[in-house]
Image (tube, rainbow, N blue to C red):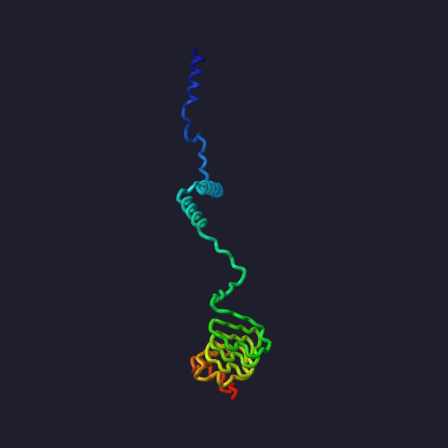
Length: 203
């Protein structure tokens, strides 16, 4: 019996608290590793970014709809061409090469038009009563002889105008080098002076 009691006594001592001097020292808590914390934050941020934002989806859907409805502008590779002035169907147009032909536009009437691509000979617009003669080159002597109406247009040089071209009875229009010099029986300035028309009048 005494041996059995001794064993029980000794066993009870195992559960007795040890004095503080015999207890193991507490290890100080280590500070968190910055790289580990950063990695955790990046993982959390990536998770947040992957979350669907309903407001963002609505905005993107609206923008996509607007883009689909907006007509696309085609890139123009060729230069824009000027729109040609519509021709009057009531005007009978005649185009000739010229080649120094004389008396072009003789007795021309209203509603008729003659376009000379090259040069005209002498007495262009002789006895014109209307219509239009357009010489894109030069004209010879006695231009506008006995002209009474219409439009006589000379883009190039003129060897000489007939004095009757500038008679008060001529109610037509004369345009020389893109400047109007005569209209409705009167000379027109500054074209008349600028081009020194009087020096070109054959008398």
